[in-house]
Length: 276
Image (cartoon, rainbow, N blue to C red; front, side, top):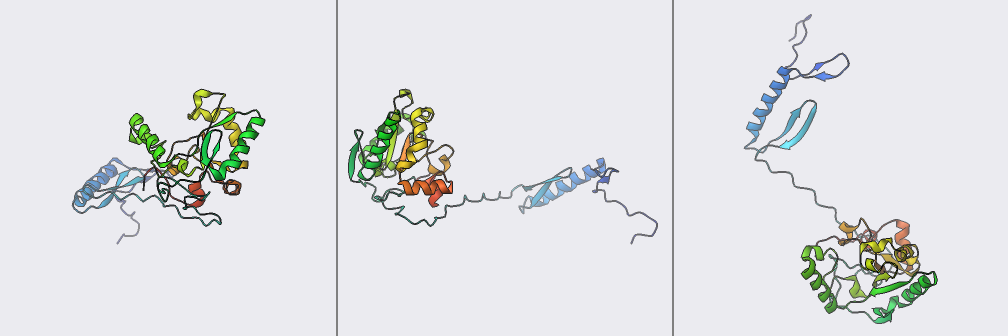
């Protein structure tokens, strides 16, 4: 018991409180704290004790020697979003989501085809694609279709060539495996233009008048920029300003209204760089 008229003895671990309210540890307090920490660490080596690294007024929690580090929290999985409309899994659906997690079913699916601007595309997109090209040219923008439908066999050749040229990891940031490619649906179109021929299938296409026109008008014809900047972790692919996907004007409007950048985000469907 503390006697009246005497001050309680201050713990040697406690800081001195200065007149301005700040706290200061004496040399004795610092040494004592370090001795305590060393003892706790020694005791915790065998038991995996979690301790605090003491430094001034900060405490950083660290695992003791021999303790297993906490497992990282798993990335949240995409939760499907209820949206009325066509199927997101049927290969012949205009809303089908095809990525590295969601292949086509069947893998060798082939759509009914039509020819637009000298390239095969799914017949369902032909009217809108023709209108888009005609209206762009009317506005003085000479867009061209550089790639449309690719068969399973053709996509196999494209993917194998990319791997042989760039290595597997680099190739798969831009080229899909057969059965996992939007081009196999016939709904995807790679556009080109004549103002900067050297930007064909390159990121600098995004700075051309053709790309500017597409960003301003392609939605009116049912086309959505499929691999935008900043979405690689979601789509699994590097940005491709030339790659547009036909989904129909209804879905383009819904995506814009919700403010999402990708089909994966809009529908709550998993994506990313890992193949299923």
